[in-house]
Length: 325
Ligand code: UT7
Image (cartoon, rainbow, N blue to C red):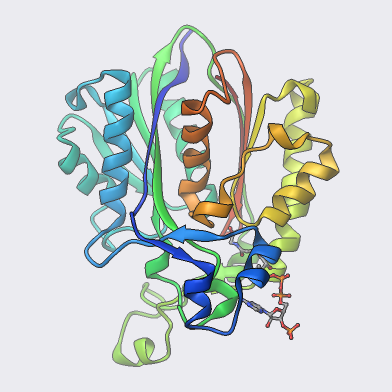
């Protein structure tokens, strides 16, 4: 029987660090408020000319090098992103070119902060179905390019970067139980009103700021806590596991208070829950693979450990995946 396993990871971040104090110089806020409400101290912000595919390619290169794999052996490159370099072609194609992965099929998927879990499930299906043996799955974002830096309710939240995982065919189990979900009734909770086919870009839409993300933070917060608790519980029940069987829970990094609430409600000890929001903010589809890379390279997860991913975001979308590391 063929399974899909993560064999290596990589990550890439912009060098530019923007602290809460830096933001407080531009909008009415403070480090105390931002850190207290979100757990974020600083985030990485891409510079002019830096785009999503740059980070996707750099993170993938790192994962390929770690695995000792030639880019030409990559058969598929999937980039989960809601901030592509261009409306089209896909950032995956631009990353593929920069990597020299000429034999890889390449495409983006759009499921916001859940995008990486969605993309991982595609890689799992391709590999178990026998279509490919080597697939790179990337979460990459430059959210700071689509937020309104004058809106203190949203500009404090997001950061840029990418995380990549190389997934290959194996006779040992790896990627396992998966739940994906969506509820379009909540589409307006986090969205960009302009620039698509509904409201194409014009001078007027730009004057109105419709190119910027609208975030109904409080509503997202409430929905995220309830949903994350529900889907994690379901994943544990369906696999006859308890929280103690999970070596590391890797939640999407949306707000430290969301993570803390879920952790406390379900009874996970703090050392079994990944968190790096303090340094990177919410990097959307990149947050789970960046956490995974840091956990794997820091020795926090070892071969044989059970790792549970949970992500949620615009759409509204969500996804959980149980991994035998
Ligand atoms: O990954 C999915 C995307 N992530 C999200 O959508 C984030 C989820 N939501 C959150 O993280 C939190 O809801 C926020 C951090 C965005 C906001 O925290 P909150 O505790 O829900 O605050 P709030 O929106 O209810 O606002 C409370 C007060 C308001 O003032 P009034 O109306 O009570 O006078 C806001 O105007 O805090 C004010 N406020 C701020 N004050 C200082 C909002 N943003 C700021 C700010 N600095 N940056």
